[in-house]
Length: 416
Ligand code: ADP
Image (cartoon, rainbow, N blue to C red; front, side):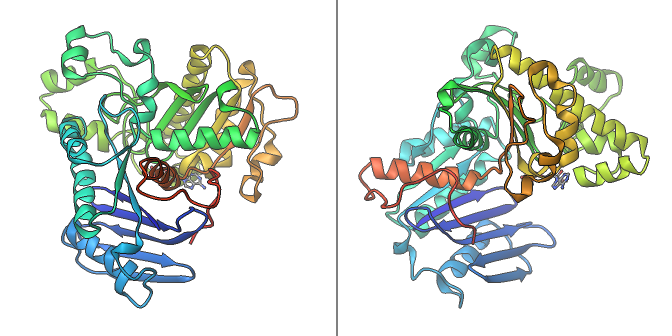
């Protein structure tokens, strides 16, 4: 069986697949670790287990996972030996990791060196790997990086026009995020269109709490909206997206705002929340905008405008556009936002069929209008499955696991 782990600072998500990834055997979430209101939820087949109570730290979260998987009355495996490989999500691989890799001592060392780029995320990712190495001895671990897919972005798009030494000596550059999602979704889109990904120029719109727009040409990321930190690009739930950095000097020097506060303002108090003043949740912003709230309407207009502008820029950067792909919470679920983003993109060849746009949930991923030169698709993302696929591929290639019997199509597994 293959286990995937997504270990954040206050949450642990896990998923257990059968060996050929045709079935999700169990999934779980441990949330609000170390905070008030901590809980866990574990699903295996038609059984669900909830726990609510104090969960002190990541070790306690892993205890819950181990108990759910191996000891409780709903246990799905007898012991750690049943797990053949483990895949981990890591947020930042710096410019060292250009693809997923099997964990060994030197990988752990390099991962630690990348903590300076993602001080909030990488330490928890590392802690998750260490927990697994301890609890599942001799089981190979694979690490899959959110940044790796974007390592193909060329220098003119990843080097900032700052003194070159900052790039060469200090690694200050565009890294991008949500790469695992964009890689999965772009390949799934090519599969849906039944065309080789090598022939396609597409813009992936990963619209969740975090937002990435990604230009994917020939299956390679060639430009991406998030940069060095995770608040630039398009506005997000609480993150600002791009703004003039001179504002930071003004906040600090003229308004006397401490730097920590500026940082919190950019990451936690901006975006939909900052403009609307009420919520970072798109559903609520849309509902209030519809009811006449002007600030919510403005937050929505900014969000849509910046996405449209970036799609146009990426079509220019790729010298054409074959597909526009929506994914993640907003992209998969909001008919209205998809429609408003596509409105006026006829100049690029994007035209959608509003009736099909309503039917996406009924298995109609292609929402293009007949005759549109750009295919517009809605593709649910599945980062866990991408992590599991990489894990099986690398561990099989290394000879530590026999090749699985079933073919591993990208979009495949039945959820638990
Ligand atoms: P995360 O980045 O945390 O994984 P998700 O991909 O789950 O986020 O996306 C969360 C966002 O999706 C929230 O802003 C939520 O309001 C939005 N969302 C979910 N369903 C809908 C919907 N039907 N209409 C509009 N927005 C939606």
